[in-house]
Image (cartoon, rainbow, N blue to C red; front, top):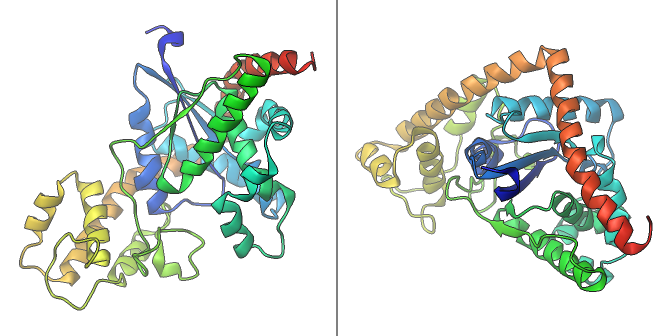
Length: 333
């Protein structure tokens, strides 16, 4: 299929250390499934976004490479997709300024993520945190993205990206594709093991609430054995009344490929101890090849550097085209 006929997909992840099981099941595990003949996927390690929180420079550099290695281990094929580190493509920062000048303060002040992050980082409410959605819009628009995989908590970012693109096109003529957010058919929302009303997150103050992709098998088993269930004694999928048990069942189906009905039938007559142990075993078995491949890739520094260099070159080719068009439209070139 000719490249111009393909739908362009853009996804990104911050290099914030080892992502959680929630990141893996909800996104990373499935990114390789988006690599079809009718799509061109851009996968971005969003290290510019990470600067809204104070970073140790050496750690940030190291984590960017580790995140690239992890994406490769999760099945991203650099021959099929464009895998790159955001800061290696300077057009992201340049487009950000132009888009900031076409974004309204009122729009940004309504972003719920800004309110949430401001509450968590009250000692560092910086301008970058406020304009974060503009940089994200730039990530999307720079590659003329058709589709952006999103979770429920990211829909606002797609909406503001669309608003910015439409406003710019109306003011300067057709420049950007208007992106669509979409929720892939595969992947589940993974909740905290200690508070199933909350999404699993590495920022959870309770380390037993989340499982990191690179956690040791013994750690994974311990965390699942400590998972919150309920005072009943039967296993059923009922997110409203049995959120903890339902979360464990969702994770189990994600790693075994069983349907929910099949999973519930499998555990019929068994107790919560069996459920927790079997879910842990399924997760450990599913993560083992990823962990092994990650370690292998990370040990080959030359290969990893080449992947990042080649990815930046491919991403820059498209980014330059878009930025050149934008600069001509606004009178900068």
